[in-house]
Image (tube, rainbow, N blue to C red; front, side, top):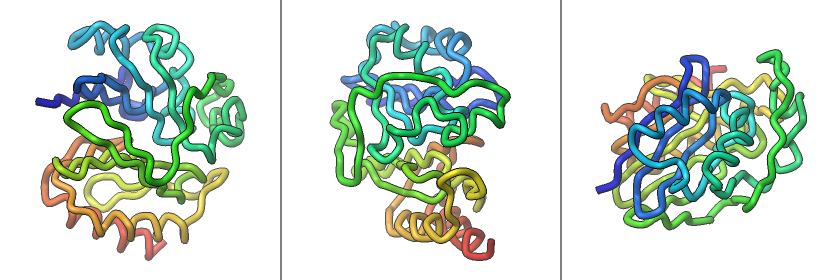
Length: 212
């Protein structure tokens, strides 16, 4: 049975998820490696993590990527559209946090249609631009699980589009795509995991995005 644990270390971090399958992975990295590693160790030896998959390059999701990559030895994956944003304070919005942009090596780029086979789960990569140019969601079709990054959040909330690479029309288009999925459980980039009528919540997000 696949387990998912939120292991991010601070309230203002983006959510970091440890997915325990045959190939353990992290979805996003947050900003604080120390507390995140401490939480990971409750479930697994960090050295067993094989991949760190970033939903996008924003600092609250990638700031700890260099330290987590070094601590785990995991391969780091990011959208092919955001590789050029690595180390850029504007594109990574690290300036909003008063920090320098994280610099890390991307081992594999992701694009629409890529499938990450981690064992029982097959995570489909969906390109969902709008919050950032290369924002991604991950969808497990059989279990109806969605890692939504900062594209949609619970209770009809959406990712902001007023930063570098953001676009409200693109976000509307991306969320429209997500309404076509059957989602039982959503693991968002912020806020809490939800399994409460998720399809309806995504519809609410679409209505909100269209009203912006």
